[in-house]
Image 1 (cartoon, rainbow, N blue to C red):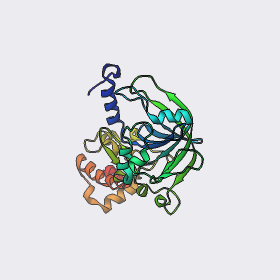
Image 2 (cartoon, rainbow, N blue to C red):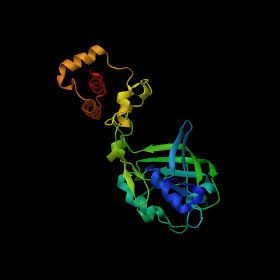
Image 3 (cartoon, rainbow, N blue to C red):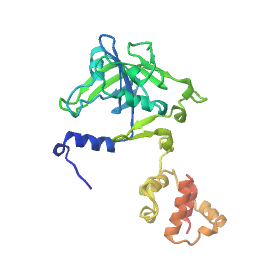
Image 4 (cartoon, one colour):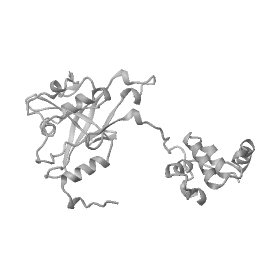
Length: 286
């Protein structure tokens, strides 16, 4: 394993490792305005939601690694204390990328990228009409992480108003993750289209799983079952009873008397179908 002391490599190389390793990252397409009313638009992938009461988003226009200069977005946020954060869908990703070009002060990135400027209701900066969700925010705080190139500047934004396109809402009024079709940033020139990689894992909140430590040692040390498989097995609240295992064996005699590796292989097939109960029954057949 490669072990790295951040102080012993260049900031640029460390920056690359961080972006490659911490991915994919959601994208904040941030719209600001300077004190003279000139609009600015730029994307940032050092971004996430950190609170819902109050509703807080944080993004970071870091100091440029190559020359330690500041980004216009940061300067505008400090001047006006207002920003619109627009989410980025797949249908606008190329325009978003174009808006990241470092145009001179006063150049309107909305126009350069071909985005439509949509008036906000509570603040001065414009929204991106093409974005499926737009957050009008006030800047509560800016936390400066350092003064050298690569240092982050955390812009803490409180949401004043949220706008959601009806086209991405489901029949219950929630956001349909397939319709919103978000993209995320990875390392280098790579992006990720979120809906192409969706899978579900029920949150273990309402129930208390037995835990991997409660799984018999023979199963825990399996050469067939992976850590993910053990996590599924450990998330049940109780093991099948001897009676249900015996009944299952009568219905499926092909699982009786199997060697350990084959038994684990069959259990893995059930787990791949999210049939955890049957997987346990196979594993517990004597």
